[in-house]
Structure formats: C-alpha cells, structure tokens
Image (tube, rainbow, N blue to C red; front, top):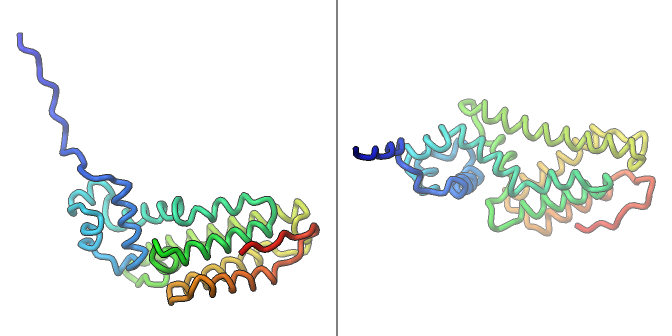
Length: 212
C-alpha cells in the first residue's frame, strides 16, 4: 500500500518580509500623505505586487492604519515612554526632546505622520482624517491624565489645570511638526522647546535642569 502524500499547502508562501514591507509603506505614507500615496507607490516601495499587498495587509486604508500603529510603536514610541517619567516636568522635557529628535531625524521624512496626514486629507479620505485626529486627541488625553496624577502627587500646583497644560503641550508639538515639515532646523525646534519649558508652572519641589 502506497503512503499518502501530504496535502499541498494552500496558496503560495509569502516571499517577502511583512515587517520590512510595512516599514517601507510607513515611509511612503509619511512622505506623501495618505491621499498623495498611490498603490503603485506602495507596491514599488514595498517590493511586492498588488495581490500580495491585498493578501497581507488588506486594502490601502487598512495598510495605512497598520502603518500608524507601526509609527506609534517605533519612531514615536518616545511618547509612551515619556509619560512614565517621575515628574511632570521631566515628562514634558522628554516629550519635547523626543519630538525634536523625531522631527529632525534625517532617516525619516520631515514632520509628523499624524499631523501631516490629517492636514492633507480631503473629503474623500475623511475616515482617515478622523482616525488621525482621534489618535492625536487620545495622546492629549493621556498627557492630561498624567498631569492629573501629578497634581494628586503634589508634583504640580493644586490650581494647575491639567487639560490646559496638556492642550498647551499638544499645540506646541503640533506646531513644531508643521515647522519641521516646512524646513525648520533642529536648532530652531530646540529653541521652541526651551521657550515652552520656561512657561511651565513651578513644581513644589525644586525643578530639574532642562536637558533639551
């Protein structure tokens, strides 16, 4: 009796690195924006054909959402780490320093993927714009919650407004992103960050030295 052959695998195995392809797609979206990026742009940069893109990532919108997640976990991971700093002032220093480092990193396109993406989306990409705005608001809410904890810990004055402080920092970093996309240098961004820190409310304990 002849032995049965094992069943043939369904479909063809992927001949590309999914993570590397996603990193390449992220760079294209970052440079061109969601609407400015075409499927040929993506397939060329990722080194795959259209059927492979659809099979691995879904459609263009799904790929963009995965790229946003990749951005948050990679280039913009400083944001999550900064919120774990021991004091509110150090949180802000790390947020601003991280923004300067990211926005002036020559390995990446200038500006911020979330900011530039939201600003460049037209009516046809309204769901994407809403997604980007929602993620920025979630980031601002996370900063606010960290400041609320700082007030409870006595690290910020009791009369400090955590929502206003979070909005202030969000506005500064968004403005820095727009400036960077327009060609602002690292030194110029650092000066903006230092000015923002000068307006920070004094903590009850002696503040740390600015390292930006």
